[in-house]
Amino acid sequence: MTERYVVAIDQGTTSTRCIVFDRRGQLVSLAQQEHKQYYPKPGWVEHDAAEIWRNVERLGPEALRRAGATIDQVAAVGIANQRETTVLWDRVTGHPIGHAVVWQDTRTDTMVTELDAEPGAEGVRHRSALPLATYFSGPRIRWMLDHHPGLQQRAERGEVLFGTMETWLIWNLTGGLHVTDVTNASRTLLLDVHTLDWSAESLAFFGIPRAMLPEVRPSIGVFGTATAAFPGVRIGAALGDQQAALFGQTCFAPGEAKCTYGTGSFLLLNTGSELVRSTHGLLSTVAYQIKGEPAAYALEGSIAITGSLVQWFRDQLELITSAPEIETLARTVTDNGGCYIVPAFSGLYAPYWRSEARGVIVGLTSYITKGHLARAVLEASAWQTREVVDAMNADSGLALKTLRVDGGMTADNLLMQFIADVLDVPVVRPLASETVSLGAAYGAGLAVDYWPDLEGLRQNWHRAAQWLPTMDDAKRETEYGNWQRAVSRTFDWIQA
Image 1 (cartoon, rainbow, N blue to C red):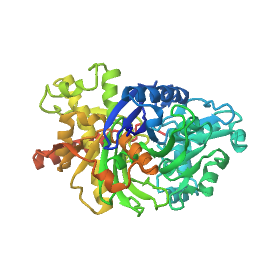
Image 2 (cartoon, helix red, strand yellow):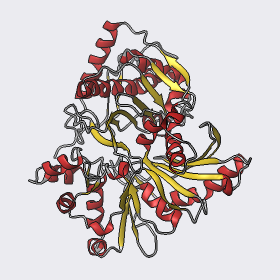
Image 3 (cartoon, rainbow, N blue to C red):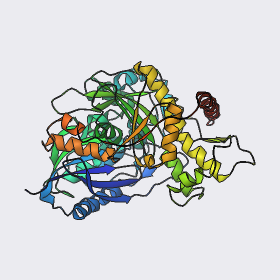
Image 4 (tube, helix red, strand yellow):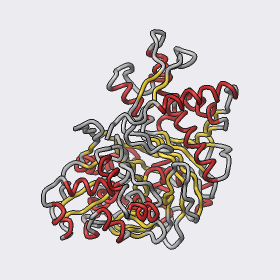
Protein backbone atom coordinates (compact mmCIF):
# COMPACT_ATOMS: atom_id res chain seq x y z
CA MET A 1 0.00 0.00 0.00
CA THR A 2 1.28 3.48 -0.86
CA GLU A 3 2.48 5.43 2.19
CA ARG A 4 0.39 8.50 3.04
CA TYR A 5 1.54 11.60 4.89
CA VAL A 6 0.33 14.74 6.62
CA VAL A 7 1.98 18.10 5.90
CA ALA A 8 2.31 20.94 8.38
CA ILE A 9 2.78 24.56 7.35
CA ASP A 10 4.58 26.17 10.28
CA GLN A 11 4.44 29.91 9.63
CA GLY A 12 6.68 31.44 12.28
CA THR A 13 7.99 34.87 13.19
CA THR A 14 11.32 34.56 11.40
CA SER A 15 10.72 31.77 8.88
CA THR A 16 8.17 29.50 7.26
CA ARG A 17 8.55 25.74 7.13
CA CYS A 18 6.70 22.93 5.44
CA ILE A 19 7.21 19.58 7.17
CA VAL A 20 6.07 16.14 6.07
CA PHE A 21 5.11 13.70 8.86
CA ASP A 22 4.35 10.00 8.70
CA ARG A 23 1.79 7.96 10.65
CA ARG A 24 4.14 7.55 13.62
CA GLY A 25 4.48 11.31 13.90
CA GLN A 26 8.05 11.20 12.63
CA LEU A 27 9.54 13.93 10.49
CA VAL A 28 10.08 12.72 6.92
CA SER A 29 11.27 15.94 5.28
CA LEU A 30 11.52 19.66 5.89
CA ALA A 31 11.81 22.75 3.70
CA GLN A 32 12.40 26.15 5.30
CA GLN A 33 12.77 29.77 4.20
CA GLU A 34 13.41 32.87 6.31
CA HIS A 35 11.55 36.09 5.51
CA LYS A 36 12.68 39.67 5.95
CA GLN A 37 12.11 41.53 9.21
CA TYR A 38 11.24 45.22 8.86
CA TYR A 39 11.95 47.67 11.71
CA PRO A 40 10.82 51.07 10.36
CA LYS A 41 10.80 52.76 13.80
CA PRO A 42 11.81 51.82 17.35
CA GLY A 43 9.33 49.26 18.66
CA TRP A 44 7.83 48.66 15.21
CA VAL A 45 8.10 45.18 13.63
CA GLU A 46 6.63 44.29 10.23
CA HIS A 47 6.50 41.44 7.70
CA ASP A 48 5.63 41.29 4.02
CA ALA A 49 2.63 38.93 3.90
CA ALA A 50 3.00 38.49 0.14
CA GLU A 51 6.60 37.30 0.62
CA ILE A 52 5.42 34.78 3.19
CA TRP A 53 2.76 33.39 0.85
CA ARG A 54 5.31 33.10 -1.98
CA ASN A 55 7.52 31.11 0.38
CA VAL A 56 4.66 28.70 1.16
CA GLU A 57 4.06 28.20 -2.57
CA ARG A 58 7.70 27.20 -3.02
CA LEU A 59 8.18 25.23 0.18
CA GLY A 60 5.18 22.91 -0.18
CA PRO A 61 6.32 21.22 -3.38
CA GLU A 62 9.94 21.26 -2.17
CA ALA A 63 9.06 19.41 1.05
CA LEU A 64 7.21 16.76 -0.95
CA ARG A 65 10.11 16.41 -3.37
CA ARG A 66 12.52 15.86 -0.49
CA ALA A 67 10.17 13.23 0.96
CA GLY A 68 9.98 11.46 -2.38
CA ALA A 69 6.19 11.87 -2.19
CA THR A 70 3.54 13.04 -4.61
CA ILE A 71 0.58 15.28 -3.92
CA ASP A 72 -1.87 12.37 -3.97
CA GLN A 73 -0.02 10.84 -0.99
CA VAL A 74 -0.89 13.82 1.22
CA ALA A 75 -3.90 13.07 3.41
CA ALA A 76 -4.25 16.60 4.79
CA VAL A 77 -2.48 19.88 5.49
CA GLY A 78 -2.44 21.60 8.89
CA ILE A 79 -1.35 25.15 9.68
CA ALA A 80 0.39 26.53 12.75
CA ASN A 81 1.11 30.24 12.73
CA GLN A 82 2.65 33.17 14.57
CA ARG A 83 -0.27 34.62 16.48
CA GLU A 84 -1.59 38.20 16.73
CA THR A 85 0.35 39.29 13.63
CA THR A 86 -2.18 41.38 11.69
CA VAL A 87 -2.73 41.36 7.93
CA LEU A 88 -5.16 43.52 5.96
CA TRP A 89 -5.77 42.90 2.28
CA ASP A 90 -7.96 43.86 -0.65
CA ARG A 91 -10.81 41.39 -1.17
CA VAL A 92 -10.74 41.76 -4.98
CA THR A 93 -7.02 41.88 -5.76
CA GLY A 94 -5.87 39.77 -2.80
CA HIS A 95 -2.96 42.18 -2.30
CA PRO A 96 -1.92 43.11 1.25
CA ILE A 97 -2.50 46.69 2.35
CA GLY A 98 0.87 47.71 3.69
CA HIS A 99 3.01 45.37 5.71
CA ALA A 100 1.69 42.93 8.30
CA VAL A 101 2.09 44.32 11.84
CA VAL A 102 3.87 41.66 13.91
CA TRP A 103 2.88 40.46 17.39
CA GLN A 104 6.04 42.02 18.90
CA ASP A 105 5.14 45.49 17.58
CA THR A 106 4.39 48.19 20.19
CA ARG A 107 3.19 51.08 18.00
CA THR A 108 -0.25 50.90 19.63
CA ASP A 109 1.01 51.54 23.17
CA THR A 110 -0.41 55.07 23.47
CA MET A 111 -3.70 53.98 21.92
CA VAL A 112 -3.98 51.02 24.27
CA THR A 113 -3.37 53.25 27.31
CA GLU A 114 -6.13 55.59 26.16
CA LEU A 115 -8.54 52.73 25.38
CA ASP A 116 -7.86 51.10 28.73
CA ALA A 117 -9.28 54.20 30.44
CA GLU A 118 -12.53 54.08 28.42
CA PRO A 119 -15.75 52.92 30.14
CA GLY A 120 -16.11 49.87 27.86
CA ALA A 121 -12.60 48.52 28.54
CA GLU A 122 -13.65 46.29 31.41
CA GLY A 123 -16.27 44.62 29.19
CA VAL A 124 -13.61 43.87 26.58
CA ARG A 125 -11.37 42.34 29.23
CA HIS A 126 -14.18 40.19 30.58
CA ARG A 127 -15.39 38.90 27.20
CA SER A 128 -11.92 38.20 25.81
CA ALA A 129 -10.36 37.08 29.15
CA LEU A 130 -7.32 39.14 28.10
CA PRO A 131 -5.77 42.42 29.25
CA LEU A 132 -5.80 45.38 26.89
CA ALA A 133 -2.23 45.27 25.60
CA THR A 134 -0.22 46.02 22.46
CA TYR A 135 0.28 42.26 22.08
CA PHE A 136 -3.15 41.57 20.57
CA SER A 137 -4.60 42.10 17.10
CA GLY A 138 -7.59 44.36 17.80
CA PRO A 139 -5.63 47.56 18.48
CA ARG A 140 -3.44 46.86 15.45
CA ILE A 141 -6.50 46.67 13.19
CA ARG A 142 -7.69 49.99 14.63
CA TRP A 143 -4.26 51.55 14.05
CA MET A 144 -4.12 50.34 10.44
CA LEU A 145 -7.63 51.64 9.71
CA ASP A 146 -6.65 55.02 11.19
CA HIS A 147 -3.41 55.35 9.23
CA HIS A 148 -4.58 54.43 5.71
CA PRO A 149 -6.92 57.11 4.30
CA GLY A 150 -10.32 55.76 3.31
CA LEU A 151 -9.64 52.31 4.71
CA GLN A 152 -12.35 52.48 7.37
CA GLN A 153 -15.06 53.08 4.78
CA ARG A 154 -13.73 50.33 2.53
CA ALA A 155 -13.64 47.94 5.49
CA GLU A 156 -17.26 48.78 6.33
CA ARG A 157 -18.21 47.86 2.76
CA GLY A 158 -16.36 44.54 3.10
CA GLU A 159 -13.75 45.51 0.52
CA VAL A 160 -10.88 45.14 3.00
CA LEU A 161 -10.34 41.92 4.94
CA PHE A 162 -8.52 41.18 8.17
CA GLY A 163 -6.78 38.01 9.16
CA THR A 164 -4.04 36.62 11.31
CA MET A 165 -1.49 34.63 9.37
CA GLU A 166 -3.45 31.36 9.12
CA THR A 167 -6.42 33.28 7.68
CA TRP A 168 -4.14 34.88 5.09
CA LEU A 169 -2.65 31.50 4.12
CA ILE A 170 -6.03 29.72 3.92
CA TRP A 171 -7.35 32.57 1.74
CA ASN A 172 -4.46 32.07 -0.68
CA LEU A 173 -4.43 28.26 -0.47
CA THR A 174 -8.14 27.99 -1.30
CA GLY A 175 -8.56 30.92 -3.64
CA GLY A 176 -10.70 33.04 -1.34
CA LEU A 177 -12.01 31.19 1.75
CA HIS A 178 -12.05 33.75 4.61
CA VAL A 179 -11.92 31.80 7.90
CA THR A 180 -10.02 31.65 11.17
CA ASP A 181 -9.91 29.20 14.06
CA VAL A 182 -10.87 29.72 17.68
CA THR A 183 -7.29 29.79 18.99
CA ASN A 184 -6.21 32.63 16.71
CA ALA A 185 -9.53 34.45 17.09
CA SER A 186 -9.10 34.32 20.87
CA ARG A 187 -5.95 36.46 20.53
CA THR A 188 -7.64 39.51 18.98
CA LEU A 189 -9.53 41.00 21.98
CA LEU A 190 -12.59 40.76 19.70
CA LEU A 191 -13.79 37.22 20.49
CA ASP A 192 -16.18 36.29 23.26
CA VAL A 193 -14.34 33.27 24.68
CA HIS A 194 -17.58 31.76 25.98
CA THR A 195 -19.68 31.94 22.78
CA LEU A 196 -16.58 31.49 20.57
CA ASP A 197 -17.83 34.15 18.17
CA TRP A 198 -17.02 37.79 17.53
CA SER A 199 -18.40 40.13 20.17
CA ALA A 200 -20.55 42.95 18.77
CA GLU A 201 -19.76 45.03 21.88
CA SER A 202 -16.01 44.59 21.52
CA LEU A 203 -16.15 45.41 17.81
CA ALA A 204 -18.05 48.60 18.62
CA PHE A 205 -15.49 49.48 21.32
CA PHE A 206 -12.65 49.36 18.79
CA GLY A 207 -14.71 50.65 15.86
CA ILE A 208 -13.90 47.58 13.76
CA PRO A 209 -16.45 46.56 11.09
CA ARG A 210 -17.62 42.95 11.30
CA ALA A 211 -17.65 42.82 7.49
CA MET A 212 -13.84 42.62 7.46
CA LEU A 213 -13.61 39.68 9.90
CA PRO A 214 -13.30 36.00 8.98
CA GLU A 215 -15.71 33.25 9.99
CA VAL A 216 -14.66 31.56 13.26
CA ARG A 217 -14.30 27.76 13.06
CA PRO A 218 -13.07 24.95 15.35
CA SER A 219 -9.30 24.40 15.20
CA ILE A 220 -9.58 20.78 14.08
CA GLY A 221 -11.97 20.00 11.24
CA VAL A 222 -11.84 20.38 7.46
CA PHE A 223 -11.68 24.06 6.51
CA GLY A 224 -11.65 23.55 2.73
CA THR A 225 -9.64 22.16 -0.14
CA ALA A 226 -6.44 23.75 -1.41
CA THR A 227 -6.20 24.93 -5.01
CA ALA A 228 -2.62 26.23 -4.72
CA ALA A 229 0.62 24.83 -3.19
CA PHE A 230 -1.20 21.55 -2.33
CA PRO A 231 -3.95 21.37 -4.98
CA GLY A 232 -6.74 18.93 -4.12
CA VAL A 233 -5.59 18.41 -0.50
CA ARG A 234 -7.92 19.16 2.41
CA ILE A 235 -6.89 21.71 5.03
CA GLY A 236 -7.71 19.87 8.25
CA ALA A 237 -6.45 22.13 11.05
CA ALA A 238 -5.34 25.61 11.98
CA LEU A 239 -3.93 26.54 15.37
CA GLY A 240 -1.90 29.37 16.80
CA ASP A 241 1.65 28.12 17.12
CA GLN A 242 1.71 27.81 20.91
CA GLN A 243 -1.59 25.96 21.04
CA ALA A 244 -0.24 23.72 18.29
CA ALA A 245 2.80 22.96 20.46
CA LEU A 246 0.54 22.07 23.40
CA PHE A 247 -1.32 19.70 21.08
CA GLY A 248 1.90 18.31 19.63
CA GLN A 249 3.21 17.64 23.15
CA THR A 250 -0.03 15.65 23.67
CA CYS A 251 -0.97 17.78 26.69
CA PHE A 252 -4.63 16.83 26.34
CA ALA A 253 -5.45 16.56 30.06
CA PRO A 254 -5.99 19.39 32.56
CA GLY A 255 -2.78 20.13 34.48
CA GLU A 256 -0.39 19.17 31.67
CA ALA A 257 1.99 21.96 30.59
CA LYS A 258 4.64 22.74 28.00
CA CYS A 259 6.97 25.62 27.16
CA THR A 260 8.10 26.40 23.63
CA TYR A 261 11.41 28.21 23.29
CA GLY A 262 11.53 30.11 20.01
CA THR A 263 11.68 33.80 19.08
CA GLY A 264 9.67 34.33 22.22
CA SER A 265 8.74 31.66 24.74
CA PHE A 266 5.30 30.50 25.73
CA LEU A 267 4.25 28.32 28.62
CA LEU A 268 0.75 26.82 28.37
CA LEU A 269 -1.15 24.82 30.98
CA ASN A 270 -4.22 22.87 29.85
CA THR A 271 -7.19 23.75 32.12
CA GLY A 272 -9.72 21.56 30.29
CA SER A 273 -13.22 22.81 29.52
CA GLU A 274 -12.95 25.38 32.32
CA LEU A 275 -11.77 28.91 31.56
CA VAL A 276 -9.51 29.88 34.48
CA ARG A 277 -9.18 33.65 34.83
CA SER A 278 -5.69 34.63 35.94
CA THR A 279 -5.03 36.98 38.85
CA HIS A 280 -1.25 36.78 38.42
CA GLY A 281 -0.58 38.29 35.02
CA LEU A 282 -1.20 35.25 32.80
CA LEU A 283 -3.54 34.98 29.82
CA SER A 284 -6.65 32.83 29.63
CA THR A 285 -6.93 31.49 26.11
CA VAL A 286 -8.54 28.83 23.93
CA ALA A 287 -6.21 25.81 23.75
CA TYR A 288 -7.98 24.05 20.86
CA GLN A 289 -11.37 22.86 19.71
CA ILE A 290 -12.10 19.64 17.86
CA LYS A 291 -15.14 19.98 15.60
CA GLY A 292 -18.26 18.77 17.38
CA GLU A 293 -16.69 18.98 20.84
CA PRO A 294 -16.42 21.70 23.51
CA ALA A 295 -13.35 23.93 23.44
CA ALA A 296 -10.41 23.22 25.73
CA TYR A 297 -8.87 26.23 27.47
CA ALA A 298 -5.41 27.05 28.77
CA LEU A 299 -3.50 29.44 30.99
CA GLU A 300 -0.60 31.00 29.13
CA GLY A 301 2.51 32.86 30.12
CA SER A 302 3.88 34.81 27.15
CA ILE A 303 7.52 35.93 27.14
CA ALA A 304 8.28 38.32 24.27
CA ILE A 305 12.04 37.94 23.91
CA THR A 306 14.07 34.73 24.32
CA GLY A 307 15.43 33.30 21.06
CA SER A 308 15.33 36.75 19.49
CA LEU A 309 17.73 37.89 22.24
CA VAL A 310 20.23 35.37 20.87
CA GLN A 311 19.57 36.75 17.37
CA TRP A 312 20.23 40.28 18.66
CA PHE A 313 23.48 39.06 20.26
CA ARG A 314 24.44 37.55 16.89
CA ASP A 315 23.18 40.13 14.40
CA GLN A 316 23.33 43.47 16.21
CA LEU A 317 26.30 42.99 18.56
CA GLU A 318 28.03 40.50 16.22
CA LEU A 319 29.61 38.67 19.19
CA ILE A 320 28.81 35.29 17.62
CA THR A 321 28.29 34.23 14.00
CA SER A 322 25.64 31.55 14.56
CA ALA A 323 23.06 30.98 17.28
CA PRO A 324 24.51 27.65 18.54
CA GLU A 325 27.82 29.41 19.28
CA ILE A 326 26.27 31.15 22.26
CA GLU A 327 26.42 27.98 24.35
CA THR A 328 30.12 27.53 23.59
CA LEU A 329 30.83 31.16 24.47
CA ALA A 330 28.75 30.97 27.66
CA ARG A 331 30.70 27.89 28.79
CA THR A 332 33.95 29.91 28.78
CA VAL A 333 32.85 31.27 32.19
CA THR A 334 31.35 29.58 35.23
CA ASP A 335 28.72 32.21 36.05
CA ASN A 336 27.34 35.54 34.85
CA GLY A 337 29.89 37.63 36.75
CA GLY A 338 27.07 39.56 38.38
CA CYS A 339 25.64 40.68 35.02
CA TYR A 340 21.94 40.38 34.11
CA ILE A 341 20.22 41.18 30.82
CA VAL A 342 16.49 41.91 30.88
CA PRO A 343 15.34 41.94 27.25
CA ALA A 344 12.31 44.23 27.47
CA PHE A 345 12.86 45.31 23.86
CA SER A 346 9.12 45.74 23.29
CA GLY A 347 7.97 46.00 26.89
CA LEU A 348 7.46 43.17 29.36
CA TYR A 349 4.81 40.52 28.82
CA ALA A 350 3.72 37.97 31.45
CA PRO A 351 3.47 38.38 34.35
CA TYR A 352 4.08 42.16 34.28
CA TRP A 353 2.41 43.56 31.15
CA ARG A 354 4.47 46.75 31.19
CA SER A 355 4.50 48.17 27.66
CA GLU A 356 6.57 51.18 28.77
CA ALA A 357 9.47 49.01 29.96
CA ARG A 358 12.67 48.78 27.92
CA GLY A 359 15.64 46.45 28.12
CA VAL A 360 18.56 46.86 30.49
CA ILE A 361 21.97 45.35 31.16
CA VAL A 362 22.82 45.69 34.86
CA GLY A 363 25.81 44.74 36.98
CA LEU A 364 28.39 45.80 34.39
CA THR A 365 31.95 46.05 35.65
CA SER A 366 35.33 45.93 33.95
CA TYR A 367 35.42 42.23 34.88
CA ILE A 368 32.60 41.36 32.45
CA THR A 369 33.59 39.60 29.22
CA LYS A 370 31.55 38.56 26.23
CA GLY A 371 31.35 35.12 27.85
CA HIS A 372 29.52 36.63 30.82
CA LEU A 373 27.19 38.48 28.46
CA ALA A 374 26.48 35.25 26.58
CA ARG A 375 25.64 33.52 29.83
CA ALA A 376 23.38 36.41 30.88
CA VAL A 377 21.55 36.11 27.55
CA LEU A 378 20.76 32.44 28.19
CA GLU A 379 19.93 32.96 31.85
CA ALA A 380 17.38 35.64 30.89
CA SER A 381 15.24 32.98 29.23
CA ALA A 382 15.37 30.79 32.34
CA TRP A 383 14.51 33.54 34.82
CA GLN A 384 11.61 34.71 32.68
CA THR A 385 10.35 31.11 32.67
CA ARG A 386 10.60 31.04 36.48
CA GLU A 387 8.44 34.17 36.76
CA VAL A 388 5.75 32.60 34.58
CA VAL A 389 5.82 29.25 36.41
CA ASP A 390 5.43 31.01 39.76
CA ALA A 391 2.37 32.84 38.42
CA MET A 392 0.93 29.65 36.92
CA ASN A 393 1.34 27.72 40.17
CA ALA A 394 -0.47 30.51 42.01
CA ASP A 395 -3.36 30.70 39.51
CA SER A 396 -3.88 26.97 39.14
CA GLY A 397 -3.36 26.02 42.78
CA LEU A 398 -0.96 23.33 41.58
CA ALA A 399 2.81 23.01 41.77
CA LEU A 400 4.40 22.22 38.41
CA LYS A 401 6.14 18.85 38.69
CA THR A 402 7.66 18.53 35.22
CA LEU A 403 8.08 20.95 32.32
CA ARG A 404 7.85 19.59 28.77
CA VAL A 405 9.90 21.74 26.42
CA ASP A 406 10.27 22.16 22.69
CA GLY A 407 11.52 24.66 20.12
CA GLY A 408 14.90 25.52 18.69
CA MET A 409 16.47 26.69 21.94
CA THR A 410 16.07 23.25 23.54
CA ALA A 411 19.17 22.18 21.60
CA ASP A 412 21.14 24.34 24.07
CA ASN A 413 21.99 21.94 26.90
CA LEU A 414 23.39 24.67 29.15
CA LEU A 415 20.14 26.60 28.91
CA MET A 416 17.98 23.54 29.58
CA GLN A 417 20.05 22.66 32.66
CA PHE A 418 19.76 26.22 33.95
CA ILE A 419 15.97 26.15 33.48
CA ALA A 420 15.77 22.93 35.51
CA ASP A 421 17.95 24.58 38.17
CA VAL A 422 15.90 27.76 38.52
CA LEU A 423 12.55 25.92 38.43
CA ASP A 424 13.75 23.09 40.69
CA VAL A 425 11.81 20.56 38.57
CA PRO A 426 12.82 18.15 35.80
CA VAL A 427 12.84 19.54 32.26
CA VAL A 428 11.93 17.00 29.57
CA ARG A 429 12.38 17.23 25.80
CA PRO A 430 10.47 14.84 23.54
CA LEU A 431 12.00 12.85 20.71
CA ALA A 432 9.96 14.93 18.25
CA SER A 433 11.28 18.44 18.90
CA GLU A 434 9.21 20.06 16.15
CA THR A 435 6.08 20.03 18.28
CA VAL A 436 4.49 23.17 16.81
CA SER A 437 4.49 21.58 13.37
CA LEU A 438 3.56 18.21 14.79
CA GLY A 439 0.54 19.68 16.57
CA ALA A 440 -0.72 21.15 13.29
CA ALA A 441 -0.14 17.79 11.60
CA TYR A 442 -1.89 15.89 14.40
CA GLY A 443 -4.92 18.17 14.13
CA ALA A 444 -5.13 17.84 10.37
CA GLY A 445 -4.71 14.07 10.55
CA LEU A 446 -7.47 13.75 13.16
CA ALA A 447 -9.82 15.78 10.98
CA VAL A 448 -9.53 13.32 8.08
CA ASP A 449 -9.23 10.12 10.20
CA TYR A 450 -5.55 9.66 9.40
CA TRP A 451 -5.19 9.15 13.16
CA PRO A 452 -8.15 7.66 15.02
CA ASP A 453 -8.13 9.49 18.35
CA LEU A 454 -6.12 11.40 20.96
CA GLU A 455 -4.90 8.25 22.68
CA GLY A 456 -3.26 7.13 19.46
CA LEU A 457 -1.34 10.42 19.39
CA ARG A 458 -0.19 9.97 22.99
CA GLN A 459 1.47 6.71 22.02
CA ASN A 460 3.69 8.64 19.58
CA TRP A 461 5.23 10.72 22.41
CA HIS A 462 8.69 9.57 23.55
CA ARG A 463 11.26 11.24 25.80
CA ALA A 464 14.57 12.17 24.20
CA ALA A 465 16.34 14.04 27.02
CA GLN A 466 15.86 15.11 30.62
CA TRP A 467 17.62 17.64 32.84
CA LEU A 468 17.38 17.41 36.64
CA PRO A 469 17.92 20.37 39.02
CA THR A 470 21.33 20.60 40.72
CA MET A 471 21.44 24.20 42.02
CA ASP A 472 21.68 24.90 45.74
CA ASP A 473 18.41 26.34 47.14
CA ALA A 474 20.08 29.38 48.69
CA LYS A 475 21.91 30.27 45.49
CA ARG A 476 18.71 29.86 43.47
CA GLU A 477 16.82 32.35 45.62
CA THR A 478 19.71 34.83 45.77
CA GLU A 479 20.06 34.82 42.00
CA TYR A 480 16.30 35.12 41.56
CA GLY A 481 16.28 38.14 43.85
CA ASN A 482 19.03 39.74 41.75
CA TRP A 483 17.02 39.05 38.60
CA GLN A 484 13.88 40.63 40.05
CA ARG A 485 15.83 43.74 41.03
CA ALA A 486 17.16 43.92 37.47
CA VAL A 487 13.61 43.65 36.08
CA SER A 488 12.49 46.54 38.28
CA ARG A 489 15.07 48.77 36.55
CA THR A 490 13.21 48.41 33.22
CA PHE A 491 9.97 49.99 34.47
CA ASP A 492 8.76 53.46 33.38
CA TRP A 493 11.49 53.98 30.79
CA ILE A 494 9.05 55.35 28.20
CA GLN A 495 7.39 58.44 29.66
CA ALA A 496 3.82 59.25 28.65
